[in-house]
Image (spheres, rainbow, N blue to C red):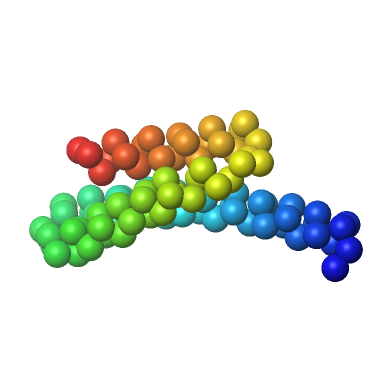
Length: 92
Protein backbone atom coordinates (compact mmCIF):
# COMPACT_ATOMS: atom_id res chain seq x y z
CA UNK A 1 0.00 0.00 0.00
CA UNK A 2 1.48 3.34 -0.99
CA UNK A 3 1.19 6.60 0.89
CA UNK A 4 -1.54 8.05 -1.36
CA UNK A 5 -3.72 5.00 -0.90
CA UNK A 6 -3.21 5.14 2.86
CA UNK A 7 -4.24 8.82 2.92
CA UNK A 8 -7.33 8.00 0.85
CA UNK A 9 -8.30 5.19 3.22
CA UNK A 10 -7.87 7.43 6.25
CA UNK A 11 -10.00 10.15 4.62
CA UNK A 12 -12.68 7.58 3.76
CA UNK A 13 -12.65 6.33 7.34
CA UNK A 14 -13.05 9.85 8.70
CA UNK A 15 -15.99 10.56 6.35
CA UNK A 16 -17.63 7.30 7.35
CA UNK A 17 -17.21 8.06 11.04
CA UNK A 18 -18.78 11.50 10.57
CA UNK A 19 -21.75 9.95 8.73
CA UNK A 20 -22.11 7.24 11.35
CA UNK A 21 -22.16 9.71 14.24
CA UNK A 22 -24.76 11.91 12.55
CA UNK A 23 -27.02 8.98 11.64
CA UNK A 24 -26.70 7.42 15.09
CA UNK A 25 -27.68 10.70 16.77
CA UNK A 26 -30.62 11.12 14.38
CA UNK A 27 -31.67 7.53 15.10
CA UNK A 28 -31.70 8.29 18.80
CA UNK A 29 -34.04 11.21 18.20
CA UNK A 30 -36.33 9.01 16.11
CA UNK A 31 -36.41 6.39 18.85
CA UNK A 32 -37.43 9.09 21.32
CA UNK A 33 -40.32 10.10 19.04
CA UNK A 34 -41.31 6.45 18.87
CA UNK A 35 -41.13 6.20 22.67
CA UNK A 36 -43.43 9.21 23.00
CA UNK A 37 -45.90 7.69 20.55
CA UNK A 38 -45.86 4.32 22.31
CA UNK A 39 -46.35 6.02 25.68
CA UNK A 40 -49.33 7.97 24.34
CA UNK A 41 -50.80 4.64 23.21
CA UNK A 42 -50.24 3.28 26.75
CA UNK A 43 -47.74 0.70 25.53
CA UNK A 44 -45.21 1.24 28.29
CA UNK A 45 -43.05 -1.76 27.42
CA UNK A 46 -42.57 -0.61 23.82
CA UNK A 47 -41.99 2.95 25.02
CA UNK A 48 -39.32 1.74 27.44
CA UNK A 49 -37.62 -0.30 24.70
CA UNK A 50 -37.58 2.64 22.28
CA UNK A 51 -36.19 4.94 24.96
CA UNK A 52 -33.51 2.36 25.75
CA UNK A 53 -32.50 2.30 22.07
CA UNK A 54 -32.33 6.11 22.13
CA UNK A 55 -30.15 6.03 25.26
CA UNK A 56 -27.79 3.52 23.64
CA UNK A 57 -27.55 5.67 20.50
CA UNK A 58 -26.66 8.67 22.68
CA UNK A 59 -23.99 6.70 24.56
CA UNK A 60 -22.51 5.40 21.30
CA UNK A 61 -22.13 8.89 19.84
CA UNK A 62 -20.64 10.21 23.08
CA UNK A 63 -18.17 7.31 23.06
CA UNK A 64 -17.00 7.74 19.46
CA UNK A 65 -17.21 11.52 19.00
CA UNK A 66 -13.77 12.12 20.58
CA UNK A 67 -12.25 9.84 17.92
CA UNK A 68 -13.60 12.07 15.16
CA UNK A 69 -10.71 14.49 15.22
CA UNK A 70 -11.10 15.77 11.66
CA UNK A 71 -14.74 16.81 11.66
CA UNK A 72 -15.43 20.20 10.21
CA UNK A 73 -16.78 22.79 12.64
CA UNK A 74 -20.14 22.48 10.91
CA UNK A 75 -20.21 18.69 11.24
CA UNK A 76 -19.20 18.82 14.91
CA UNK A 77 -21.84 21.47 15.65
CA UNK A 78 -24.57 19.50 13.87
CA UNK A 79 -23.76 16.32 15.79
CA UNK A 80 -23.50 18.26 19.06
CA UNK A 81 -26.89 19.85 18.43
CA UNK A 82 -28.45 16.43 17.86
CA UNK A 83 -26.80 15.13 21.04
CA UNK A 84 -28.03 18.08 23.08
CA UNK A 85 -31.60 17.60 21.86
CA UNK A 86 -31.40 13.86 22.51
CA UNK A 87 -29.97 14.32 26.01
CA UNK A 88 -32.74 16.78 26.88
CA UNK A 89 -35.40 14.32 25.72
CA UNK A 90 -33.78 11.48 27.63
CA UNK A 91 -33.66 13.56 30.81
CA UNK A 92 -37.28 14.75 30.53
